[in-house]
Every structure is written in C-alpha cells, then in structure tokens.
Image: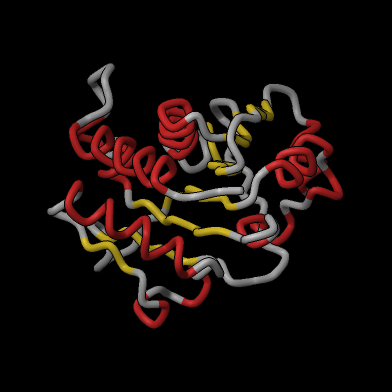
Length: 197
C-alpha cells in the first residue's frame, strides 16, 4: 500500500539528511495536518535529519505505520540507514485526550528525555510516557513500525489538534500558534541535547 500511495499524483516525499538524530512525519500534508510542519521546523532548528510524506489537499489515505516500509521506498531506506534515533510525529484526536501528548516507541530513554523538555514548554498539556496510559494501538511498539527501525529506535509522539495548530480556532494565523511554536522549540532542544554517534 505504501508504494501505491507514493506513486499517486501530488504525493511528495521529503528527505533531508543532516545529523544522525531524525524527525519523521510520514502521515503529513492533508492527512495528519501540522505534523510535517512541526517535524520540518524542529529538524531545521536542530540541524537534524527529516523524512516526511506530504499528501496533497483532497487526499487522506491512511497507510498503517507497520506498512510504511523501506522495502517500498529507497528514500525512506536512505533516511533510516543514516539516522541513529528518530522522533516520529503523528496526529490524533480522542475524547479525554485533547490536551495529552502520547510518547510511545521502544526507546524509552529518549521518551523520558523528550518529556523532560516538553513538560516545562507545554505546561497546559499532559506528556504521557507511561505505556499503560497510552491506548494500545497508539503505543508504536511493533517492530515493523519505522520508529523502531533505526539502530537505537525512537519515540512515536501522538499530537492532539491544538498543539499542532490545527484546531478550528487556530486556522486563521500565518505564524504557528503559541503551543505549536513551544512544541517545535522543545523538540529541537531535545534533539540538540541528545548525544548521537
């Protein structure tokens, strides 16, 4: 399915190889809006690497993370070979979780490192690192999930709408709203502070 998505008109794959710390947003563009914007901005500020898939307006094709495979994308394979750790940004919305960021993935040390920077930056949000607090299908623990494919794996960050700047009340401005700007800065700082080989 992933190769079929990439072959569609208007779908764009973005790869920028910089440091061995990477950011991913492979459900970007019109699907999980704002995730690619946050990933690209954090990567640029931190000198980190970036992999994103941008779906054009009118297309909302959700390929499950476990089907986003480097076997179907030389660009993704190149990115995963280059990075040591990765933070993958996703968007979600769920009753009871509108102000909760979920930090899944198998690199739990990196999850706590991220949380330590996100909590003071986003004081009005809960930053959940306890896997029991995260709904099972949002934990990002499957070995085929791209977040777990780099040599030291990574963290899957699920972002609710407001922190992505996509809540209806936030759509009129051109600059990222406050929480989104703070999120970007905290992610960039976490990347800069993390030691990679």
